[in-house]
Length: 356
Image: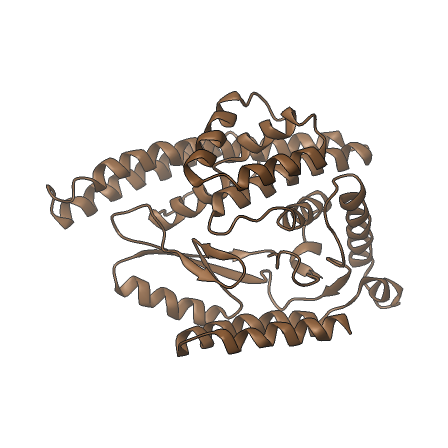
């Protein structure tokens, strides 16, 4: 009955949405999520079925162990999350659209019930996402559509496991579960960088402890290598973004064609440096395999997701790696005015030393 009551609740949201475009957008969101919920089966039942492939059984068993670990060791509010499973028709569960003006690094914000404003728009319907992208392209925006492996309903619903999780390696699956569960602890409306950086910090420490328990510390070393690659990419992106901001401040001096040419030169330089950096790592970087084509939208979204990870890692260390104390500290931080909050996060980042 709980699943049905959740379906009824999510359908009632439609009544509160003004405008045809809003109704059209939320209809595909709601129908997409409801479809996942209706098609999902309890994990225990999937595990008991004789036709369940062995590799899926192994992944689901690991996921259930990770749920217990998340609740007891990481003190995450698991509830009924990830207790059901659904097979997806494609590798992603949703896609996100990002739109940024041609000569800016500030992404367009979309606002939603409950979760506030975000720097992206999620779609279950890829065709609708592409249609929206064409609209922004025609208005001169830089755009990007990215596949999303998982999303969180912030505890409003019991999010299911799906093949986006189970097709990953065990360490990546478990890390993704910890990340999504962390959004249930603290979620600051309208601050994507805060939310995603916090969840990534929980994901990283949770994975370290999980692999330590499993006797696989060498796997965590690979995870740290991926993190190092991401951090060094972030340094490149931050440097390039500062150069682009200085360029965009010259809109009263340079004409649009001059701006476009210089912008492309700066982005091409970033792509070349990204390719050179990737040569030092065994796996593709956060923008995928080189060579890559980048624009304002790629850069803006990447910064949103990675900006404050060192700050939250430092705060976790200052909390004595006690998760309950850490969550309380993060909650207090989330209540500060934006200017003070960012100042505190920047100060924490400056004190950050290492991830172990």
